[in-house]
Image 1 (cartoon, protein in one colour):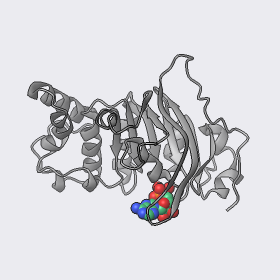
Image 2: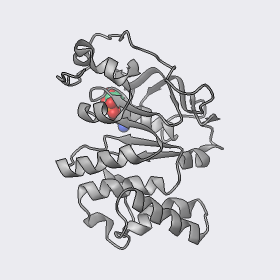
Image 3: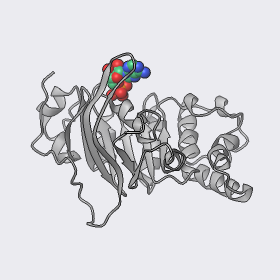
Length: 261
Ligand code: ADP
């Protein structure tokens, strides 16, 4: 597949205030899976505090692999990833896992306690916070995702949309500096999708969200990063990249035939 560089590419200059904090700094990250499959080939990415960024690209582009590096699930001691200025060293791992709220595509990979409250309280409890604060954080996180009142419900009996929202609450309760979501709207019905979009819009947190849902990208994310074959092939303002059908097509992305673009 040809690699097309968009004229709008701005690798590390998001439109933010001069003194804004760099939340994600990835410098030339290369990763090959143990079986020998190259997944990332020199990815650089910088995301500032408060940005909401969409990560798009065809299956196999390396989006999930990149996300798994952001809280150290993948990557060794020499990882060229910094979160809020801190290197991803072994000593920093517990701290960085608190800073990066990583939400997997399948909520069943995230929810493992019997009840919703236990799932949402697990992170802060594990951080050693006092019980009163754990309760407060869990209540607030459930409120943020519109699931207050579901504390005693059995996690595995919820609908997919409800599970996804509880999965987001399990990381919000850790008060993360950054939310990293892997295909949050995948598999949701229209109502569940709308609820999730409203939730993501209202959350005042820095976000990196992978998705195939170009309408979601258009609606919610001012900045868009396109990956293909383990590389960042375009990074810029969403309206500018969405206005380039040949760029989208070259990387297996759906074009939005929108008159206002
Ligand atoms: P995306 O999230 O964009 O679909 P991935 O990060 O899952 O892409 O995959 C990037 C590449 O790494 C693909 O070639 C994929 O087959 C490979 N890959 C992903 N996960 C694994 C794994 N656990 N073991 C070996 N190869 C993997």
